[in-house]
Image (cartoon, rainbow, N blue to C red; front, side, top):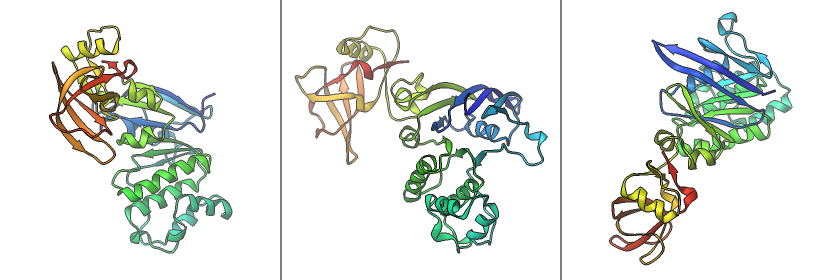
Length: 326
């Protein structure tokens, strides 16, 4: 039995499908991320799972139990499932300890551990209107967790946070799973948030799930250029460069475009194994440089830790396992 099973969910909004026949399963403690462009249906899907939005078709099962239609409830929501929206509204002009006390369904010992995990113990006497955006979000998260959910749905939790608060929240989300034993589903536009955290990723486009796999599979073997673009830079090669790199890598020739991540190319001095080229641009980013290389038949962008100068003659190669055809 799956911890969460979403089966055939469809939903139309203003005559268009926001979700179309979406199905997936999640096991308990499995970290699942959902990726896609704005308008792909990610937030709507989480709201359906949370019991806040009624789908036109399909069902949601949680721990083997069919979740009720939101219209059948006085207060929308599914027991055991908490949804942290992008707004994370809090009551105004109350002390933090009041907000949390009203929501608490746990022992004081468990609540104190939860406050420690959420990094909010020092905020208890502050008023909610005196908190920063990152602090308000952590309070809102703690208030949800005090209800002892088994599944936590995180809808773009890192949006509008500065790097310091974002890093704190990333640590908290990791500990929510490890220390509190709560299963999570996460939506984020930043590939660094999902690739480094998730056990599996769902890729959505126009209300459909177009790919599911491990972060490594999603990154190295995207099903389309759209899926590739969600998770970082890439080179999309066609024509002479496809033929040249296919021959260099020793793979079977295909009449498709070739997709290669910038870091998958290897750069060597002229005379090495690979395709000969000339460096046209170098951009330094600290831990690596982004290099544009002009080759016969086109140009590529690659990332390297090597020191290289514009106009240098070089050799470029790519391993067969780093090539993907789309």
